[in-house]
Length: 283
Ligand SMILES: Cc1ncc(C[n+]2csc(CCOP(=O)(O)OP(=O)(O)O)c2C)c(N)n1
Ligand code: SF4
Ligand SMILES: [Mg+2]
Image (cartoon, rainbow, N blue to C red; front, side):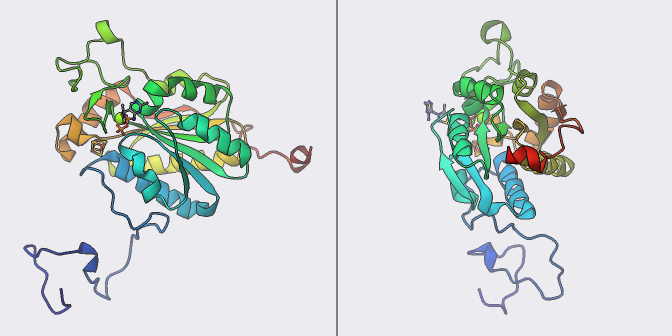
């Protein structure tokens, strides 16, 4: 499209990136350079997109792009390594915590995190998750809870709400048959190795800001070498929930948050937050 053509709401752009921003506009937001130019494959309204964007912003603002290694899961976010412009390692389904343990032990000076869905972390990877946190591995776990196995078309997950209809619970989750949804954050918080445990969401602008703050803390605390940080993010899966993005936000607000209340579950004490003294580090 030439610069002279007028863009109206009916104009179909071949590539929206070719829109020229008038000179008198102030730039108030820019895509973080820690995200690659690859377009996300996520469905409209999917919480993974927002979570990726937040990670990119946090890497940029903390200046840790070159010092961070992420472990990508199996699930809809399996291509996280294509989007986050940092060093990344793919892990087999459920094994991200074990892989991150190895990476962090070899590279203690790097910021290491896993990014995992609920099927990945709370079903197939339950053992890895619990033992990694119990050992207090000095990593950050980012746990995307969308209450279903998103990638494989929305089967029931350990996190599926009571009564929630999924492809494998067509009459709704029957807790007398399959048990209650597991609140992973509350389950792991009492472990001595858990340093910081919080539950956030990305369904409103305010919650996006809070989730970002939690991620900043999660990475900063890794400098202290005092245990595992665990950040759960309640996330939308509009496609498998069979909802529009807007209605899926309402579902989070009215249903998900009743069962998974937001907020900090375990926070470090003031004493915990003191950096190791130089002489102790030298020992
Ligand atoms: C060992 C193994 N079992 C099963 C699968 C099939 N599988 C791929 S993704 C997935 C579910 C992913 O769900 P979740 O972790 O919640 O991620 P989401 O897609 O919801 O983000 C399953 C069961 C697999 N790839 N490997
Ligand atoms: S299926 Fe769900 S989790 Fe997967 S990309 Fe689509 S909305 Fe996101
Ligand atoms: Mg999921």
